Length: 232
Image 1 (cartoon, rainbow, N blue to C red):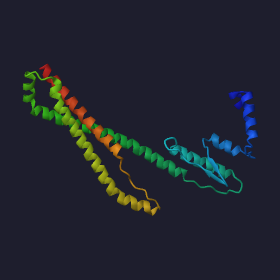
Image 2: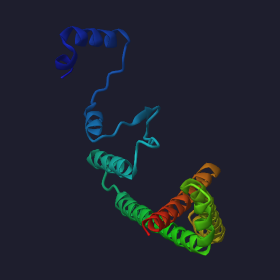
Image 3: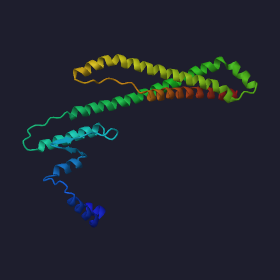
Image 4: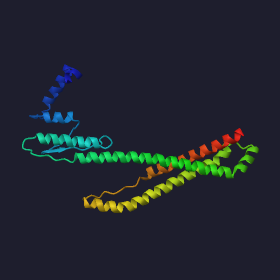
């Protein structure tokens, strides 16, 4: 296949270079070829160590248990090996649970975002109704729609930011309480695992997103009210 891809001359030059560099020759490299065909590329270390390190952002849980299954198959085929036991089935169940949890979190996030949008919409609508007379007087004096809308935009954005800040504080407090039990459970397995709160950049992004939702709710509420009053 190499001759087909790069040609006879390039292949001959490559083989000549390999021979001149005294490259190591392995008596039986079929197991390596089979491993590569399975999607596994391990790292050989002296004296007799095979290192396999998943690459973050490139390898997932599927790749991890695929490697475990490939390694177990090679060990079972090795002479003198009677039994090989792996926990890949448990890892697959854990990965499936994590996938379901991520989907549930995404759905919950969408529901909470829709709830924040609806709450802001209704609160701004109520604020508009309480200031209806002031709005009408401002219009008679020549106030533009942008001048009327701007204070409600600020109010909606502030409500969203406040809601995002309260939500972040509630999550941080729940992590503090949950970590007491998590640390005890992790220590029983000889681990120091604990729940970690989002970083400052992520927290700021969440708060800004909540503020954007508040602004969007205010925008919808004010725009609908002004459209209704114009048609009367």
